[in-house]
Length: 185
Image (cartoon, rainbow, N blue to C red; front, side, top):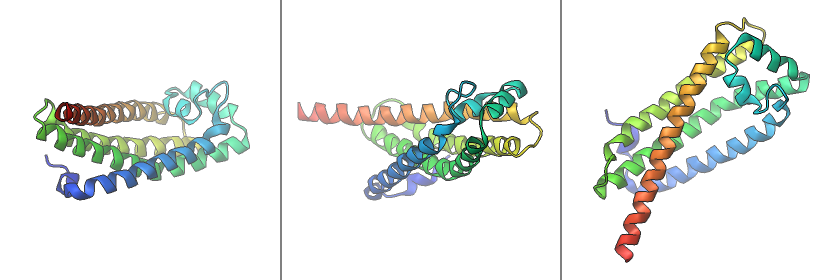
């Protein structure tokens, strides 16, 4: 299935990618600053520990380790994550499509994986939205079960899809560098 980013002219891919990358990195920096008070003994990775807790007991321990200020930071972080999921999904998806174009043009293997992986990264964004819904409901006092497990599995699949998208984009970058070096040498 063709990805919508495949219809963007090559001449515009680079500028759009850099814009999305800067937006992603800027949002990531802000989220790290906002999330700093969330790192506790029970949540050593802050909000990521909360995402991956998976059980009522562990989730409750994390919530109990956060003071009132940290709970506000968690709520703000979960809200800001909705912007983040749009920009990271768009940036990584575009990188996959752009990488696929270069890989196909140079006749390297795996050129056909770009569009499916780009769709996969959008799926990661959707999983992130479901995960955040569950974590927000928990944060505001809704029942922990089944949201703890739902959030954990959404996070695991989200991280896996993002990882594969990033690896593919890096593969495309390596293909481009190797091809340039071969032409120069």
